[in-house]
Length: 357
Ligand code: IPM
Ligand code: MN
Image (cartoon, rainbow, N blue to C red):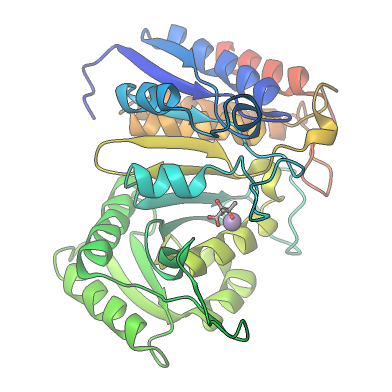
């Protein structure tokens, strides 16, 4: 990304349920940091999700997809409503498959970081001891079968195929090593697989080892996924960057989320070579919509990931520091279920105030 740039076009998908309110709170935080750091964010809103499906019969209308393609980055709220379904019974508003595969966003980056005063599911863990990032392959693996599974004509069997390609593995592994360099923490990449049992994962690990040769300054280690699940609970402080297949990454990033206060503080970046979108990883919580009680923190963290992607790493760091300070001073308090004790506005204002302090 071009660091000289000072005006960015951001395609915003406010989404369904609590989406619009948390995204607008997060945009206010982003505008604040942009004005402090002298750059401009032009937010352009596009309809997509369950609401768009109800209105147009298409959860991602062509105009919205075009807008996303033309923007420097896409800022996306949660989409989907439980009662809005396709004829086959699946949710109509979920965009993950269409955006990730459609725009070839092969990286799903999910930072897992424990902030001060946040209740962790792990006893006696201090901030600094849980600070790692999941680099999940986002376009193949077992989810390459998304929408392509086979059901036997008897109706008595079903299969999904796990696909690992050389190109897909090389690019995700390379991204993981580059990320370890960018983070400059422990400089360690852990390859998570099941190569003791499955041929596809032996192939994944082999390619990991090949790519690792090009990064002598970064420690490369391998771990079976079952052992990794245990280690993420028992010794999370040993991890820096994890790289793995789509399904394993999906599962382990939620496990990680539970160790840092849950989905209320987890954001995800979906990144490819040409496009990227940034989102809170929680859902649209329709029952909370309009109550002003939704926690905008994950959306704000997603905004920080977007600034990083745009090359505004200092501004992203400022947001992170502001959140950290707000937690430290208890102007933001999280309940054990990850929701905020205070309302949407109060959380956003606390962070904006920290940014201006
Ligand atoms: C995620 C979600 C999605 C996925 C679902 C909603 C399709 O679980 O982003 O982790 O499977 O990737
Ligand atoms: Mn998931």
